[in-house]
Structures are given as structure tokens and as C-alpha cells.
Length: 64
Image 1 (cartoon, rainbow, N blue to C red):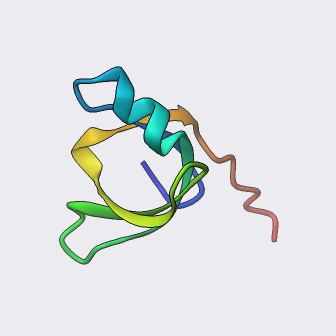
Image 2 (cartoon, helix red, strand yellow):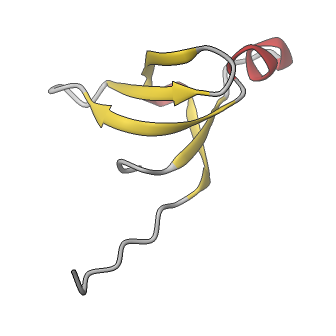
């Protein structure tokens, strides 16, 4: 999981999927336990990494 990845919140209920929607990882906490995510349903929130599931990985162009 890295900055720019498209994720969804995957706790144990379908309701949490609806509330958060999908999001883009903006940054990680120093411990790596939390990610700052821009959610379609909630705005920017800190979220527990262990509850995030990657939908699409960001492809980086290393030629810059």
C-alpha cells in the first residue's frame, strides 16, 4: 500500500463501505498504523491501515 493507491474501507459491515465510499491515500502516520485518506463519502480522515483494501494501485512513472 502506498500514497496514491485507491482504497476502500473494509471493516466487518457493508454499512462502513457505504459511509466511506472509496478513497485515495494521501499520507501515512509515522508508525504506519494509520493512513490519511481522502474519502468520497467523508472528506479527509485518518483511517486504520489494517481496515483498508486496495482497489487499484498507483502506477508511478519513474522517468520524471
